[in-house]
Image (cartoon, rainbow, N blue to C red):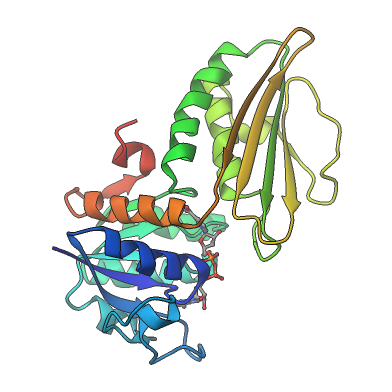
Length: 266
Ligand code: NAD
């Protein structure tokens, strides 16, 4: 049995993780952590997620929650991840990080933590998007000459980062296929989703609409053809199921920084 603690347990992803964990025979949620002052503290994590009680109360002490845990799953805020990673390192617990929008100094903390504990960190844990990552690297190497490359992403209006972590990773994979760095190719204008495509660049357009969970479309176009790759997440369960699969995998790994490509052997 793998004992899991969820940080951000009352959030949209935290609740999806609690609901989806019931589908795994070998996973048990033993801790559910929220920020100090959260209105759901002390409530049962199952009830907060809209299911029956799981006999785990939401609390605001990660060290207490991690005492008997094997792995911490973090879906919180970019500014919270580094503190959580330092606690996991101190207690030698494995980690799965789904939180996006980390600043370079926060990313550095994760890299350092990964020299002490195994960490799976991925901006999108859905199986479909991870397959797309590996397909797009190949696509970048094939459609390298004269194609206009565009990435279109749509998410709910509450999303804090833009472009999405997934759009950035899709761009990185295409750039890898092209043998270049994304930051030399990327054009993104958060204020202008209709900006013109520029051949030779990777244009990312971000849209924030209603409660959209996560749509990504990637196109390669030249004067004679257009190739489209799309992924739509209908439910946060797509990410939660991937994160739980990553949790099962990471507890068997040596310290290091991994992503879903490693988990899925892609
Ligand atoms: P959310 O705002 O609904 O949930 C975040 C939760 O974290 C909130 O309940 C908040 O109170 C809690 N939190 C904040 N500080 C905390 C702390 N110090 N300790 C414990 N809990 C704390 O957001 P969400 O939609 O669940 O997304 C969370 C993160 O996951 C975002 O960065 C989002 O972009 C990312 N995300 C990643 C994937 C993926 O597959 N990797 C999928 C969806 C969302």
